[in-house]
Image (cartoon, rainbow, N blue to C red; front, side):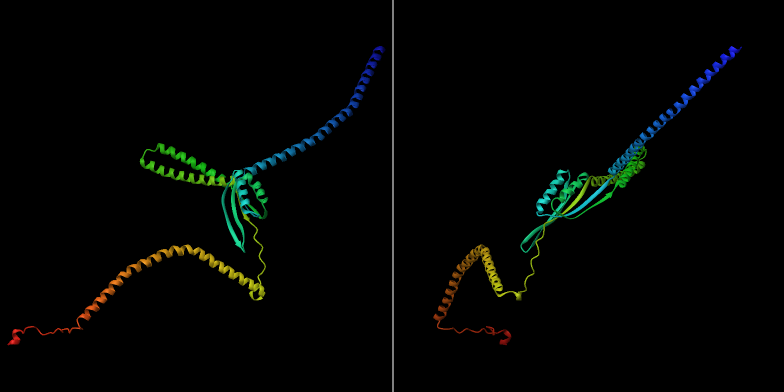
Length: 339
């Protein structure tokens, strides 16, 4: 009995010792496990920060990309105007035109004027080019390199909503046209056919008109317009002239000599210019006068001969013969007078 109690006591002590060992190991392992958990959680939290930052950056990049795509999808009409001063008008205008053609555009309008002042000449004018929208800014930069830019402006107009509206209206009209065509095929009377045909013609006219508007807007969006006004430098204004009465005598004399020379030279040039015309006109005039004179001489000779013959006849008759005056008396008396 005592031995059994002793055995049970030993077993109980062993069980208590085992439980104590397990408890100590679990207590010791608890902090280590906690430390590992802390380290793991800390590591996870520290690693999650870059992940969140990367996700934020990616979101920002995607937002920028979407914004850029949205801006690129907008239909923008751009018109620009530049005023440049250059040394040579023709060279600059040719360079701008060549640039427009090389970029896939064309010259839509141009004009040039010549100015004169005190013997000096210079050109002013403009050239209007239409270039693809993506080449607009590079064309502006090229124009700026040609000379001194006096002014520059660019205007834009967003026609995206207009194009969307036109497309929606065209879609509705096309659907209506298709329905009318179906009704037209199923029409049973002439009156119904004529009515549907008139309505179909009206719808088709609206479609063509809206399509023309859409093409025009798309063309203006695809090609930007740049008007370049080109000016050559005007000559500097001459010094103010001295009043006539304040000029020196030598200057007045030399000016008069110059005026006489200019006048004389002008007369000589005019005479030289008119000489061929005078010769050409003198030949028929002289010939005509000689011809008229040759015809008038025989007439004068005949008239003189007739006058001399008349005078000779009058002299041979011994003077003027008395002429018998006519009388009103009849040659014979009437029977009444005799009675």
